Image 1 (cartoon, rainbow, N blue to C red):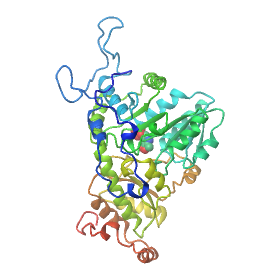
Image 2 (cartoon, helix red, strand yellow):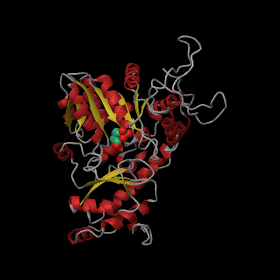
Image 3 (cartoon, rainbow, N blue to C red):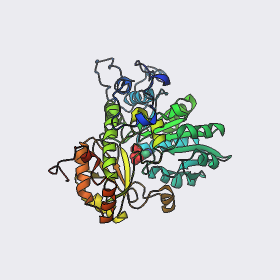
Image 4 (cartoon, rainbow, N blue to C red):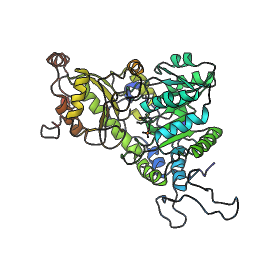
Amino acid sequence: MGVRSTVPRTRPASQVIEPKPASSQCREVADEGPDHWSTMAIRAGRRPDPTTGAILTPIVQSTTYVQQAVGLHKGHTYSRASNPTVSTLEEAMGALEDALPAVACSTGMSAISTLLLAVLKAGDHVVAGRAIYGGTVRFANLVLASLGIRTTFVDTTSAASVGEAIGPSTRLVFIETPANPTLALADIAAIAKECRRRRVLLVVDNTFMTPVLLRPLDRGADVCIQSTTKYVEGHNATVGGVLTTRDTALRERFALIRKTLGTIQSPFEAWLTLQGLKTLPLRIRRHSVNALRVARFLESHPAVRRVFYPGLESFAQHDLACRQHAQGHHGGMLSFELEGGVEAGVKLMNRVRLCSLAENLGAAETLITHPVSMTHGDVPERQRREAGITDGLVRLSVGLEDPLDVIADLRGALGRGSRRRRVQARSAGSDTPHDARRGQAASPGRRGG
Ligand SMILES: Cc1ncc(COP(=O)(O)O)c(C=O)c1O
């Protein structure tokens, strides 16, 4: 296995900033505690270039590597198999999870397909979450099905439902938490117990939380996948994905299948991802703080029917969120439904000015998405309905702008809401945005207001 980082590994579980009890833990702005994550994100896997001393990992843009003699080389032979810049990213990402060096792929979907093709064969059965990224559903229905691999989509908010769906031919359980786009949570430790009992692999897509806020391998998962396109790189500049595991045989299998399929990350994308990674802990905390403020605003707006954000006390699985997510933060993703259903949702998305109507998530810019027509268009309608992905659902990836500007933009685009809801909201004492109640309302002169 590759050279491990010279930087101390992540802390033993006892020293990791552990969730505090629910009541004190889920505060709007968590305490600034020890920040070992930032050290790891900046230093792990990196060392000065031995030939020049360059502090940044060089971009090794080369297809091949000259060998000193037959079979004698410096660890790399051909860039479809491995590349020094990509290897540095792999070390860094692995170290963040106390795992083996990650296996870095060209996109999140290529990581998912490499993983699934590496461990599944004809006749196998997969249990997957009902509400997961639409591309993963498409891969299961289009590719796995054609290879004779069946997938059952279940409600992963219940570990028992996952357990019941596991049969004699089940090889793997694939969950996403929080799920895209409903934000529904899965209890990783409880599902891991079901999987262990039945000798089934548990794979967690941790794209929304990143290892800074959630470490699935510590909770019993066998493999963790992340689309680095999102928070890890974080600047809307690259696409990429990583697989992490603590199992040497699995890691070797992923690398072999990646070489076979040709799904490796490119050196330049890997380099940009290494730069983005340095600020991941800072960014994900700020995304979380901003998202909570925006969620509170939306929750109190008369035009909004429901808001899904794990950090809200009204969120059905708020207790689990507080237990499972680290540092009292819950990420930058939220979704909501408007009183006026689809029509109102479309109007909102066409009216926003600061929020960008686009498909990605997890970057500095706030992005607004209509899952049914964009990211989840290929999910069969029945599955969407069962998963709670309604036609009017709006997904928001809250960025790093001033949240008051985002709120002002949304307020301007939402209009005033129905008279009935305004009266209801007023009688509940909540017709004013949360921020305004604290004397922090966005000034009327701000964008979008
Ligand atoms: C949760 C999740 N997993 C995986 C992916 C796929 O990642 P990529 O777009 O990098 O292929 C996405 C993409 O939106 C996602 O949201």
